[in-house]
Amino acid sequence: MKTKIFCLLMVGVLFAAQTPGALAQATQGSVHEWSAVQAIATDERVIVKHKDGKTTEGKMIEASENNLRLSRGSKVVDIPRDSVRQILVAKGKAAKSKWGLIGAGIGGAAGAGIGATQVSRDKDDSEIWVPVGLAFGAGAGAVAGLLFGASRRKRTLIYEAP
Image 1: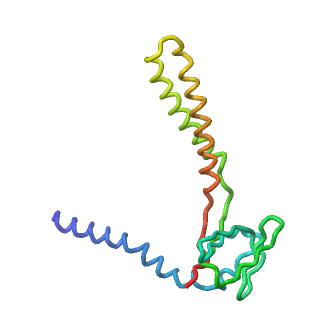
Image 2: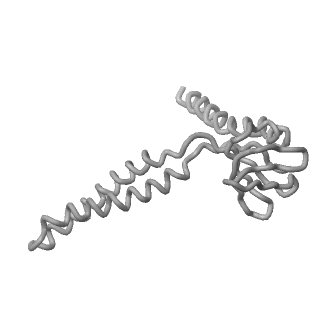
Image 3: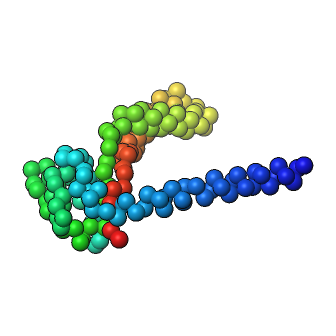
């Protein structure tokens, strides 16, 4: 009886492990079609990875059969289709404040913990180490959280060169 249950569990695990690969293969055909790039709406945030390794970010203006046109601030950038390796669309806003607060909390706790270890070592001014550690840790954690949060947007692969 235990062997049957074990075999059924193994079959279930193997099936679940193969499902994402099968789904990726099913959607892979549409990723190589330039018509998906032409269907991107105007003013969508687009990230273009070039074949030479460079990356260009901007807002979509238009995509013709052989060219992609983006706006980067006040400049218009034309990118030839044959130099494009990947095109991703970024959606949503960066959650900088959320990650900044999380980083400040974690950094503050770590700093206070480090400050608390100094209390037992130095008896003269031991009451200052916990608040100092809390302040420095919260500041460093907030900066790290802001940087991390600025990079957290949902990116969807729209096109990949064949």
